Length: 71
Image (cartoon, rainbow, N blue to C red; front, side, top):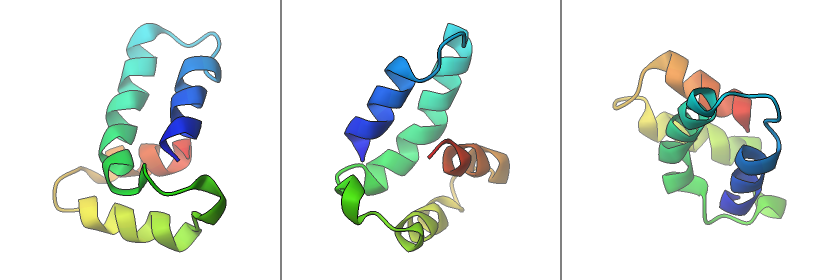
């Protein structure tokens, strides 16, 4: 999972400013701490939902929504 997100951050944001890219990295970082080691081929929507649920107490709803939408 982490490799796919890193590729997207590096190559999939053409025309995006560096501050915006850093913002996405910041939003995705906490989520990747939870699911980053999981192979992408076995990642499910349920895995993402449970992982986001673990982060609800520490992060704002808009931050979590951006992380989810970025996946």
